[in-house]
Structures are given as C-alpha cells and as structure tokens.
Length: 280
Image (cartoon, rainbow, N blue to C red; front, top):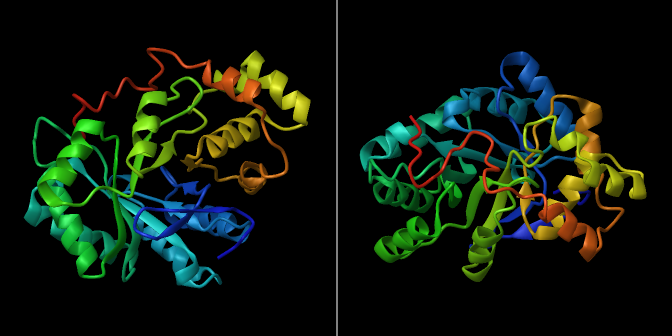
C-alpha cells in the first residue's frame, strides 16, 4: 500500500489509510476518471454506498486502475430499507455484483434507523458475510453509543469503525471519546462541512496563513490529529492532491482547541439526529 498516507489499525487488524476519497455523486465515466485520478495521486481508501448508486463506478475504477486490488480499501454501506437479515444478506451480495468485486474491505450499516429496530438483524448479516469472506471488516455509520452497546451485547461483536458527521462546526467530542474508550475508530463524513461558510472562517484562515496552507488542509490536519479517518470528496485532481498534502506540518494544542471550539449545538449540516433519523 502507498505510504504517502499513514495507516491506522482497526480492532480486527485491518489497516486503513487516515484519509480516503468520498465518492457521493461521482457517477458514470466521469466518476470513474475522478476516482482513478485520486488513486493515481496516492489514495487507497475509496468510500461508496448502496444509496449513492455508484458502486459500479467505483468497481470500474478499481478494475481499470494499475494498483493491485489488495492494496486498495473499498467501503460500501447497507441502506436503511434493507436491514432485515434476509434482505441485508441479499443486498451485500448485490453490492458486490454491482461493483464486480469479490469482497469489500469495509462494509457499514448506513444508519441505525431505531424506529425500524432492525439494526441488530442487519449486524448479524454483516457478521455472517464476514465469515463467508465477502467482507474483511464490519462497522457502522451514525450509531450512538447505546446502539453499539446493543450490537455487542446481542451478537458478541462490536464495530471496527463508526462513520459519523464530524467537522469543525460539529466536533463530536463526547462521541469520539466513547469510541476511543471502546477501541472503535472514528471516521468523518463531510469533514469539510459541505459548506462555504467553513472555508471563510477567520479563525481557520489565520491558522492556514500561519502554515501557508489552505483552510481545507488545516481542517483535514485537525481530523488527523484527532485520530479520525476523513473521507473528503473531490473530483478535481489538484484538490485531491491538496487534501492529502497535510503531513508536513503539525497543529499545536492551542490551534487544535481553537478549531474544536468552533463547534455549535446546532452544528449538524442537515439536522440528521441518529436517535430519530430514518434513512430509506
């Protein structure tokens, strides 16, 4: 695996790069070229989902890439409408067929959908798929501590990763602390907050100017120093390279605190509270 991006070990022994490529809305031939561009620049972790409707695009990029499959880490996710055990098993298989892959390195339950109360059934399907060799590591997205505690209590297995909304306006300090205490790695979706507001923040600009870096680079460095795995999305080759060029400077404790201090009580981008939000 490329050593341009450091790796982090999960609780089951699989290693992941600390920065990957988000692929939401990257579709078709243009999406394939964007993903290939990222791989050429050193990305080895590629994140997709059943509901992104681009697992085939990701798989085609993997097929066309000159990088061996075993050096890549491909992630996909189970949608909320297929959380019953039988449909989850079928959906995992269908995800692999769509991508024309023999296995996923990481497969996640996209949302807990607590009103459905099927996430434990879905988790058992992921466990069994891992036993069959269809998945190397299993995890979740947007799960609260009580959801993950129930998974471990009822199945004996806890997630390797919890992918959560995490950015300077929503720093998830308590959730990240819980992850660390339970040996579950934090992965950040929307690490740059999907908003122009964060890219025009005076505090972030001051820190960026000090290091002669972009605000995006400062934010991604903050994620890295928090111990989180970020998956910024970009189709631009220049931005893709910029996003992984963060390993030649270090934020000090004051700067880390300033960035974390930007968090807000209403910092979620779309007000998607996992305690009540239901994904289709």
